[in-house]
Image (cartoon, rainbow, N blue to C red; front, side, top):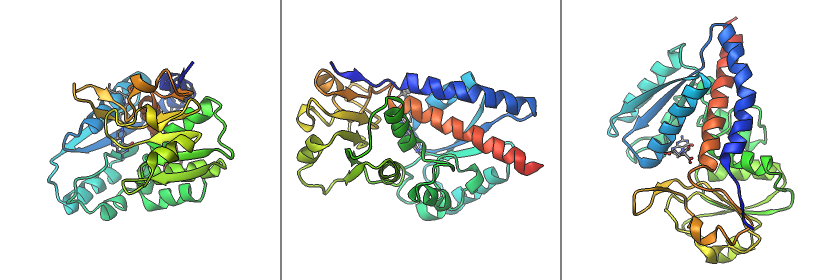
Length: 286
Ligand SMILES: Nc1nc(=O)c2c([nH]1)NC[C@@H]1CN(c3ccc(C(=O)N[C@@H](CCC(=O)O)C(=O)O)cc3)C=[N+]21
């Protein structure tokens, strides 16, 4: 029997621990607030945004979405980030990525105040992850994948994990978090040869390709634990993961569904970090 690794159970646990801290902030007259910056309207951004707004309402966190023209210049976007940095009502900032190609991502990454960098885009925060320090802000998506593995008591020590994604938002930071737990990590990408062989030999496969239903049975075995980070629309326009869920869900050892898997935990991890940022700013004010 394939185990379905539902995100909702993990998210619930994290939310329970957040509720008290949000109350404590309220008693001090502080409302945690997230500023979400979106350029254009990519479906995976929109999906995340919906999920953030819904969770914020439930938790008592304030969310403000800033929709900017996708043709905005790097300079204008940097200036806007600075406006948010200086706005005392905003506890944390999320800028959806990947950014449009014309934007100089390196300059944008350093334009966010490290204290409001709740999705860990600034090199100073990312460096802590690469050093194995988990006390700061972590990138929400890879942290969510870790939370799912850990909450389900999936052994990581000495396990072979294959990650299909080499970005700074998912693949690279996830590799560092897994290394910290003594897993053996392989990062795969578009030039990887014999991907099937690699995934079939892994204990755990994490996919973040962004191609709906791309991976079918031939990539896995009965022992595979599959963490599907992909969020895209299939041919019918339905939200779908990278894995053809119906074709493998009776076959592999365990798998996260989409929707209802990594995404729901990502949102919770992100908002948890907004609360954390708000607390830190409170202590700094005094
Ligand atoms: N800087 C940055 N960090 C990210 O982590 C990031 C990003 N940019 N850009 C977009 C992708 C995509 N992503 C999602 C997270 C949660 C859901 C989510 O909660 N989805 C719900 C469904 C929501 C619905 O119904 O539309 C679910 O899977 O259950 C979706 C997508 C994070 N990303």
